[in-house]
Length: 293
Image 1 (cartoon, rainbow, N blue to C red):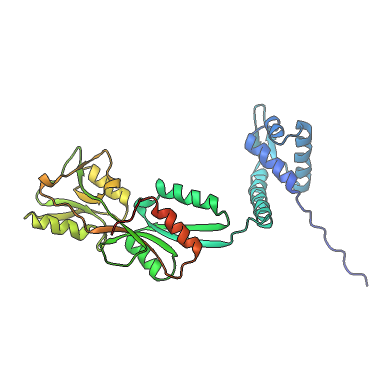
Image 2: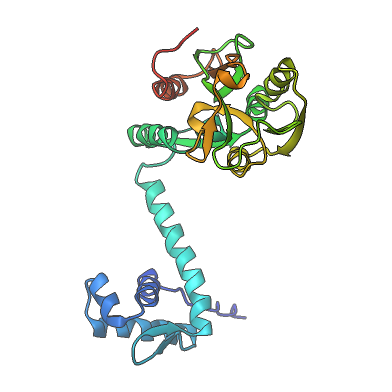
């Protein structure tokens, strides 16, 4: 008895799939052929071959543009995934595989700007290193570090509260709304991070030392939320100097509020950290200049 003949499953050619994707993205056979450095007739032939394999019409050829049919939309979704996997495979085989992962934790107000510039420069210098960056409240970032989930953290902490590899003074500012100030209200409305959040105790203690009453008017774990609430007149707050916007007014000591100098920006990694983690720490540290003790 002869074995049953194996059913031949058609294999879609990646070159044909790439052609279909290009035509769909360009909306034109003419534009697609230019992008593919091919002739319009060759592009049309490849699409017809793909339609024969799929057993469906894949493109509607209008007077002005070309649009996918329902079957074409379905095939396009798979085509993009297959082409992406092909690119991933080529990258892996080219020797550009990731050799090491470094997990960095930073506060929300350090995301973007100088931090991302520093990380991008580091990544270009070390393309084999995969950076995983986590942002959030400092207490959450620190907890993740203590659980071994992060290799390096940049956090704000009370001065001298924890040993660090480098630290800098955190410049804090009392801020109010430039258009709808709240300082003279009674009780003073405060805009703050959640309980145990940074600066919260400093704020309440300072207001009480003035002999003024206070109430929590707005609580948010988001720095942008705090900034917006103050700008719109929901209350005063205490934030890093770099977080002050043109919509805020900085309250000077003449307002009765004292300068708060209790916080440090600290960089932490374990004594056993490898050279790559230490190099990244030095790169991040250069954003702040010479460290201060």
